[in-house]
Length: 273
Image (cartoon, rainbow, N blue to C red; front, side):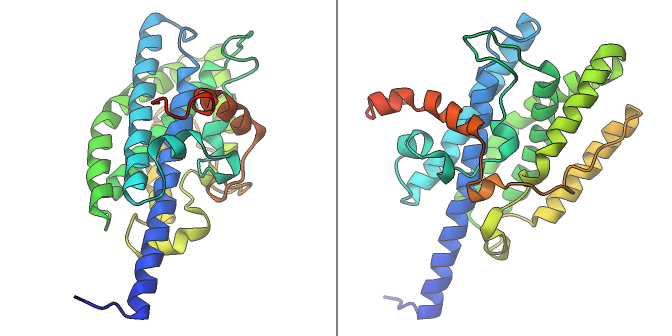
């Protein structure tokens, strides 16, 4: 039997803590993103968009389940408890993804902003593809394997949202004005999308994923090419550092969403999600 030195034990503990933190970021991002997407069911501009958004949201919730399962495998808790039983301050999702779709609620006078939905979804999907590409080389093999599975579906998500983004930006008139306003709104909350929070050094030190700066630069390069083709300028999405969702800093929007998302779980914890 191999005996670990105190240094080796400490290193192993640090690795696991960093891994769990990163997995919570990935899972929580997709969990809340899928919910915000699901709120568009029946409210999208036309039936094709409605079906596509519902399918993408279902895929995204499936991705969250994959990451929560990896957390369960590491002893962090059951999938259901991790998804539905944690308070807002325990969540590590980006603030951008928890923002409401617009005034009203799904059932009461929804006045959602399709331009905001398109920009948020497109920007996030590009970022997610970049992350999955990096995670395919993660030092934690189960995470690398999961990233490969997730990335297959992201090709279609990306194609869908890029098409919407380009069409609306190219339309001119009110569509262009609303899209430009949505871009500014999304960029105001985009800074923590690539953040790894308080354990950033440990996450990159153990080669779980590449540095946030490297991934940010990849995102900027991709987006600049798209914006230039549309005669538009990409705002600085990383210069303004406000609150960081990776450190449990969130808005009332997340609190309200979790009240709805966890309602069945609170009523019957044995129910499957």
